[in-house]
Length: 171
Image (cartoon, rainbow, N blue to C red; front, top):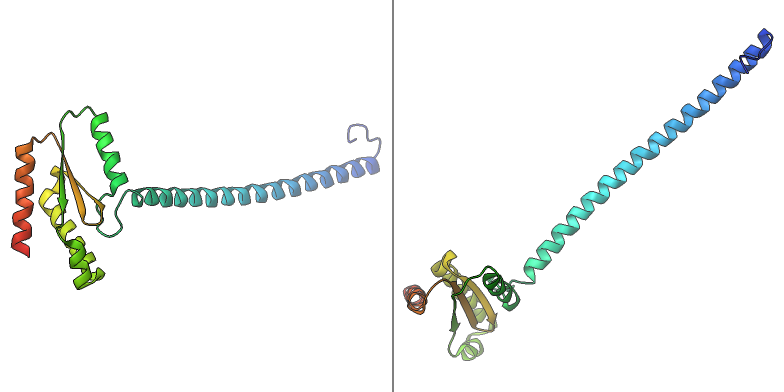
């Protein structure tokens, strides 16, 4: 329109139209930029929520493998660890079973809260005695299992005797 303008009025009109169009485009650009910023904020918020949910899932997954009372692995967690040991090619995996004699009578006479404290005490002692040499779990009730990779029966017996001595000293 500016090229075809034959006089000053036509040129002025074309200039105003150009200015009006430029202003409109600039306005749409500002709106688009604001929408883009808003979308960016929403995307960041969504990413943060996804990370939080992933962490919740990770924690829930760990808790699903852990005994809530003692903090030791539960049966599911122990099964997973044993499967992992065999998948890694370990040929010797030895399990030691610990069972508290007459625990039901203990619970009945002293109460379940005291029974829970006894189980927590025992699990702490197992953790302290076995340390990183074995993997400890509570199978249920008053039954515990410790898995040793690469240990022979005599070594496992020695480890369990250490635990027994620790418990005897502490009681």
